[in-house]
Image (cartoon, rainbow, N blue to C red):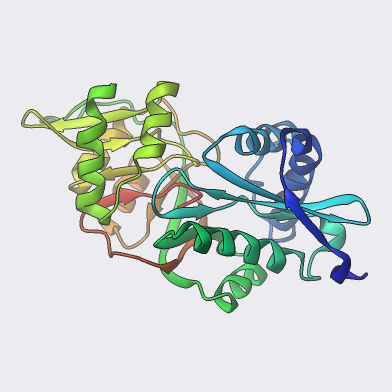
Length: 288
């Protein structure tokens, strides 16, 4: 197959059905090959995720075509200064032929054109080929992350108040994120405020952490590990495959396990460019 004939073009809303099908089949096929549950439980969920990215003004989308047929897609979350890659998917019929590399180079060039100080992504620890691809493209492994899922814990922690975030909390949330990561993720927080999924935790009358949601596609930041424990303990459920807990935060991960959550899979957080070792507690999203 002549991958030299591959065409890359901007993604549009009309691509959602086919790109969503490929997204589901690609992730499900790789997961099944390694005896792991799929990240997306059905084709409809794959289509919904891809449609959301294709129609959101904060995402850059690129679609790969071969002989007039869509064979893959990739996305760049541009809602904050540091950008996040994914989901990247390639049709199983043309995998391992260079399509993924072309899709990755496209979003990396896009990030460079925008002057993004850093690029980040997460990849499934069992997928050796994608890990090798990202390393060859210059990404550096920064952290191992455990995806954990289970029943809601459903309790309050003494001294910590968790409540729904309001627009007035945006500045405080950004400040906590800058304190922990050196940059804020205000675009994502603003979206979560609109969707009504954002929560903050207060300690001694001030905001000390927040979560855009407790879910696979959401992130959380706290000044301390107990701030995140309070947010997790108050969550009514954990969306998608689960929440992503850095394995080197052994106190938080052990606490999650002791409260009935179980590890679904291990993932790798990888970066290019600006990366500040977190000074506090955090849960990345599947995008970073």
